[in-house]
Amino acid sequence: MRIGLLAMSGIRATDPVLLDLGLTLPGFVERSKQVAALPSLGLLYLAAVTPEGHELDYWEAEGDGSEPQELYDCDLVAISTFTAQIFEAYAIADRLRAAGVKVAMGGLHVSSEPEEAANHADYVVIGEGERVWPDVVVLAERDAPPTTLRARDYEPVDVGELPVPRFDLLGDRPYNRYTVQSSRGCPWRCDFCASTVMLQERYRLRPVRDVVRDIKAILALHPGAFIEFADDNTFVDKSWGKELCRALVPLGIKWFTETDVSVADDTELLELMAKAGCRQVLIGLETPSSGELSEIELGGRFKQRRHPSYATAIGRIQDHGITVNGCFILGLDGQGPDAFDAVLEFAQRTWLYEVQVTYMTAFPGTPLYRRLEQEGRILEPRRWDLCTLFDVNHEPDGMSVGQLRDGMYRLSTELYEAEAIRRRRAPFLARLRRHGRSGARGVPTG
Ligand code: B12
Image 1 (tube, rainbow, N blue to C red):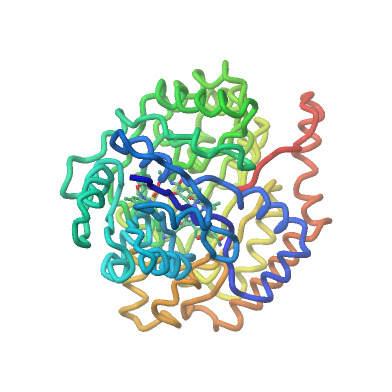
Image 2 (tube, rainbow, N blue to C red; image 1 turned 90 degrees about the horizontal axis):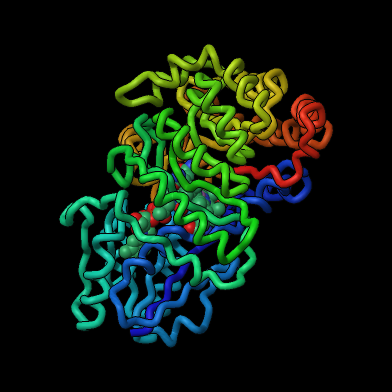
């Protein structure tokens, strides 16, 4: 069969005011440019486990949600889904099926809304795809009727045996960075988390040698590539983290990852991360005032315990030449209108190199979604296109929707105007100059 793999990339937001701000504020523009072009690692994994004897092609949907015409020559098209673009993905699936092409859908959104997806796809896959996908291919080959398959009904995916993703299928498309996973999942359970909580697997570390093997595969195709770890939380296990960093040093790469503040506890780890080329860590700080954290954390108080040491931790990480991208959520339960100034004050005081502010967003399938739905606080149920992190779709409990939006517009303007960015970054850049690295150009954002 001829199999097409369709990724839906790019950045989504519908709020016209924020979009407008995004076009003019340097912080926004820089960030969206950096992250907009990443390949779909999930599809590259599926490609790698596709049974022999099929022709595979990787495609990206266009920014306007239209599909490449070549997909109509395929027998089967696999679409990977996030929530924000799901309506575009369904529309593409409907057009392909109307033209006689079989469609399989998987990924985070359809894993939480399989019944909805079954209206648009022949084969819907819930959960991790590596064990299930080969069966989907066989079903399509046999022209089997539509069905839904669950990863849960298969052996769990052994991350110690993952193949090299088929990076070769990406061809010469211009990506800013290439993604690799060193781990899957996160041990902490936050009610809003739209990845770990949904795929429902425990935290799993990959063998360091396999991670290095995958990065080498990227470098063989794209020498000098910038690597982004598509992990939820890379450095939970410090001794494994050090082993990973030691193995990365000889590769001479630059990389970005998502982790938690506990990296700051271990100076040896920070030194190794810097030596191994870590340019930035993205950390979910969530809020500058710890009170709201009790609402977020399910079955643990990791962030609540760590909150008092956030500022010290940021300082320690950035002192090692690694920038911190601190992420804050606005509209959390318990948060009042003073939250906006608090974020700004915290960011300026701690000299966060990068700051990301997003709205609390109830993604389908999350504990947060279920809670807000029960409380009647989802403003427009099933408006999945609003699940962008940059659109309000819930009734906050500490302020009005209008206050939340206006506060976000003001905060974004203040955070991302050139002078504020310059001030926040100055100490880090001065440190770099003192320590001889030429500058922070190429520092990525997440
Ligand atoms: C890389 C990344 C991106 C890339 C995606 C590139 C691409 N085309 O895939 C870019 C930068 C484009 C991106 C954009 C956005 N992202 Co993003 N992103 C990530 C990130 C960091 C890693 C995803 C990843 O590579 N995972 C690793 C792969 C291996 O896992 P996977 O994709 O889930 O695939 C597995 C299974 O799901 C399944 N599977 C997946 N697809 C298919 C298809 C079939 C047919 C089958 C059988 C199986 C299957 O099998 C795979 C292997 O097991 C995650 C955070 C995280 N740590 O997960 C956020 C994340 C996915 N992003 C998120 C969001 C909100 C966005 C944006 C809406 C932000 C915005 N405002 O624009 C946009 C949406 C873009 C869009 N077009 O819709 C949310 C999504 C939540 C949700 N339920 O949708 C996440 C979880 C982050 C978060 N804060 O919660 N993102």
